Image (cartoon, rainbow, N blue to C red):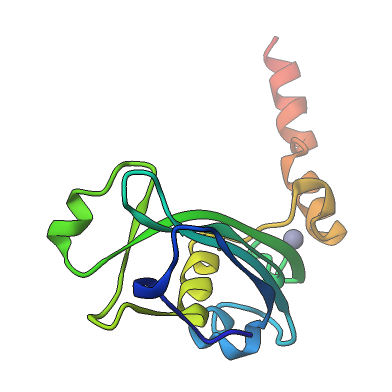
Amino acid sequence: MQKCINVNTIPSQQQCFAGEVSIDTLPNLQSSLAEKGAIGHYSIVCAVDTEGYTYLEGKATATVKLICERCLNVMDRELVSHFALSPVTDDEQAKDLPVRYEAIVVDKEGKIALADLLEQELILQLPLVPKHEQMNCNQLWQKENFEAQRPNPFTVLAALKQK
Ligand SMILES: [Zn+2]
């Protein structure tokens, strides 16, 4: 994997990067996951647009293992991030960006660590509360839940007597 993109040397002609990243090497993302070994895929196009804005546009995906908070089993979740970023060196520059771009802060040298970018974009796709789709959730949980919802027969009987 290419380690850095230098935004100061991005040409006006499109430049493409694509590859794989081991999610194990992205510690802030990995710490939210249930298992190691996930692989992320990315493709990024860099160029300078007709208005002179440098941009990085692309997609990052990874299928990761999360813990379902309902049944506590491990589940697969596909994270898919589409992004359009433009490098800035401070908040003022960030405010002036056209809405089609989100700011990505770079240092004076203009370097962006590709791993940091991908990690940040994929973390944004993590669900706040990971849960299976209802249908796929643990069967035992479904059974318990079903029984909890069933009315108590004595309550039903009491209601009948009142009529
Ligand atoms: Zn579940």
